[in-house]
Image (cartoon, rainbow, N blue to C red; front, side, top):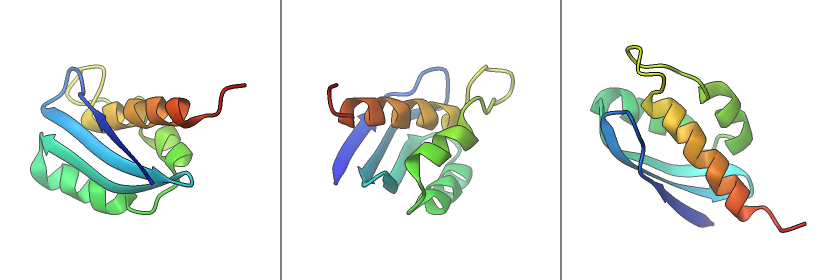
Length: 88
């Protein structure tokens, strides 16, 4: 299992951490932000397919910011998957 940490931009949360094992998300955690909503997102994503999660969350907007904590998570997951991809 690989662990990742991401500093989001343009949102209230200050840090996002998560694990990916065999393309599956585990232990998603947001520091800061809307606690109730982000805790719910974290619970819903436990065991979710990482690539499918990116498809669902990418582009989600919060109050006209052009991004959201969920969108920032999709960016973090994308970067993590790119890092983990074998060099070709």
